[in-house]
Length: 280
Image (cartoon, rainbow, N blue to C red; front, side):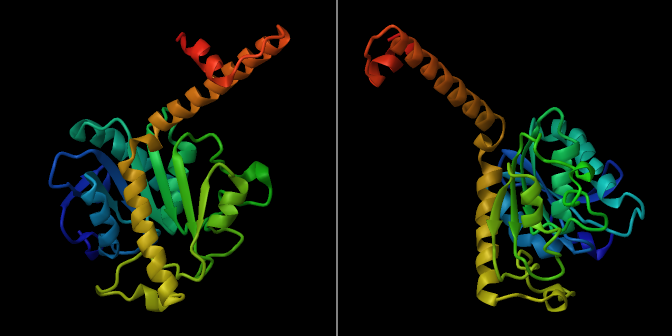
């Protein structure tokens, strides 16, 4: 195993991929795949990993090597994430999973939601300053050539720093432009590497620019809170979809009931209307 997958946790091969699986101290309540930026050591994401562990998630750290395979790299890795969950779900007794990805890892996380969630078991996706380049898949100017997130039922959040190596035509804001169902969080003037930890053998922040130090520190704090909130809340997945459907159906029924009352010339208070609907 390379230095890209060092640190606490169990190093394993799952679905042909080298990953580091870290378990929470108590019985796990969820499972989240943590996808790195291109060729970024997993140790740079210890803070995010620890945040996930603190809320009872099993963390599957997946180092994104952008050089292997050379063809269809991002699509192959998106397929691998799905395959790994299918293998691990029985071991950890999980029916749903979440993904947190940074940079290219964020793009791959979005691709899982767009292409590999027909059974709707993907609970949430957080793409931290995703890069949709090499190749462009979400933000082609011609709509017919884009992968779309509009059919996904997962709770999807994208952040954007608008700094570093990310082209504005292919960053998180651009992805949101084509996919309005995705939540967008702006971390203006933060560095692209703001979500990574300091230290270690490689100084990627120095190589790619830090952005405004205060803005970068704030972006990292907000990202950690976001990660904890999304991964912890089951209401972010199937339950939330059920609640939204129930609310929608209730509103529609209330409107129909109101229309019926108006047609019959009766005047009924909103409170009596709801009691009638509930059989009270």
